[in-house]
Image: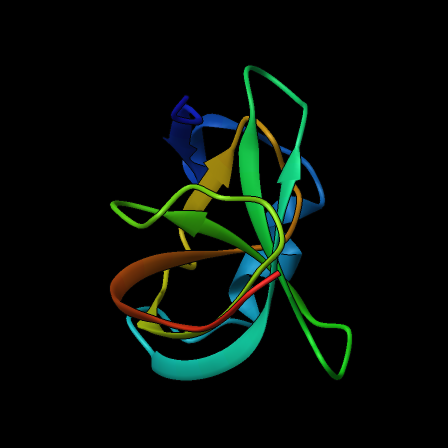
Amino acid sequence: MACIALPVSTFDHSWSAIAATISQGQDVTVKGKMKLINVEGGCYQLITTDNTHYELQGEFPKQDGLIVKVRGTLVADLVTTCQIGRPLQVKNIQILRNH
């Protein structure tokens, strides 16, 4: 259940402006709740306590409702099929609570 992602240059729309505000390659550590979004075969969104939405990319436990701490890299030049948040390439994930 992986989402397809294409470079921003493939498209000519407002996502380019959004992507420009994200520092390419910026490492972040965030905590939040994972949510399965039933779009395009299923994508995972991380919703933080300040209501920031990230679309998780890469390898991680795929389970709806997990409370996790994620260390990863923001990917600014990526437009995903799901478009459910800032693309975040997962480097490390720690499960804090299982439901």
